[in-house]
Image (cartoon, rainbow, N blue to C red; front, side):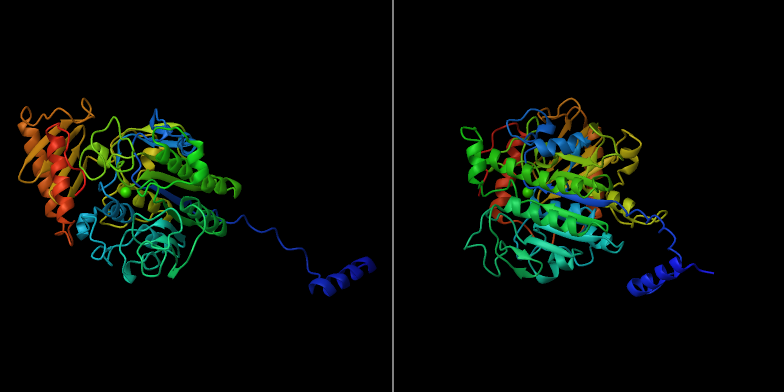
Amino acid sequence: MKSWKTIVLCLILIFFFGGCSEPPEPLEEPEPLPPNILIILADDAGYADFGFQGETDLSTPNIDRLASRGVVFSDAHVTATVCSPSRAGLLTGRYQQRFGYESNSPPASMGLDAAERTLAALLKEQGYRTGAFGKWHLGLQDEHHPNYRGFDEFYGFLGGSRSYFPSPLQDRPGSPRAIMHNREYVSFEGYLTDVLAERAASFIAESKNRPFFAYLSFNAVHTPMEADRADMNRFAGHQRQILAAMTWAMDRAVGRVIDTLDELGIRDNTLVFFLSDNGGAAFNNSRNLPLKGWKGNKFEGGHRVPFLASWPGRIEEGATFTGLTSSLDIVPTALALALPEGSDIPAGLDGVDLLPFLLDDRQENPHELLFWRKEDASAVRMGEWKLIRLDDYDSVLYNLEDDLGETSDLSSANPDKLSEMISLLESWEEELEEPRWHEGEGWVRVTRNIHQALMDNKEPGRIAP
Ligand code: CA
């Protein structure tokens, strides 16, 4: 029989809570969420322009801290030496030439084939919340809009090369440089690099009970060279003042996003990649040393990029990975984490899941071969060997282990290696589609002249049309 105290308690419980049943069993521990994926992409940043890459006169303390809490890849490459095709390879995990996406312009023709699935679309299928922040540069038409390519949330601009400040000329409906929030044109205040980080940080905070994929695609440090006044003052007298200030702002923005992960307690469940979309450009004062070449050409300075992965507690911290790696690898690596255990990674990807290399500290090459091609210039990498072929001109062969600066053409001394690599390139080309659009004649001519000069170890004359 219940005591009067119990009866009173029951009446109170009935009044307030509608019952007096036994207290519920403690809830089972919720299933841990699959790891979040965060890709932070810099635009046209120099190989040598980050503290974690070695000596530099630029300051990147937050990105350096990210590197110290992860693995730095010393031989990592993007799939193109210009913005747009590089992003097509990065987000699909496939050589973009497979679907005719080879060149950078003209913007009206470019766009990611509807049949290609982006990492966002693939992760969305696994229940991820997906967001893109910043420069899109994968097509201006409706069907190419990030909201139709797997991203639940988009805040940024569809084209390239926009101002870092509000701009009456660019911020008008229909402009490929206007800022959009999803499908709406919006205005913003402040310095765009900071605004993009704020947007990404809010998205992450709103996603904390769901796995998320955030793609933070800065336009920094692409031209136009525009910096925040306070950042400019900080670097007064610096030889590369504007670039130093823009890089400092990008670093602050990275810090803002990483701090958000720390504050939310999800840092150890988030795999972060940081890389640049192509080599440092000729027009933004960036430096790619000790590499030869820059954005737009097939020398290492065009496609070997700063690249790091950070996942504290899971992959090694403060380590360097020397194997041949590609931006193509991000898609299969992310999928390996997101897919249910025992699932196969979709067929047709050109990337390699990097987790076995990172988790088991295997220092082998994820790739035996890597390929590049745009217009008349192509390249192949096989182990220490690198071939650059300029159609109807010449092919050069370098041994990168002895000659990272690509100055000694060994093609005459190694005819067998030369023909082996040319036939590997030709076999790969047989798998590709014809390019669906081409760069303007002026750029094709200038790029060809630059290749010719650099192949002959000469200073190129013109570097712009
Ligand atoms: Ca770029």
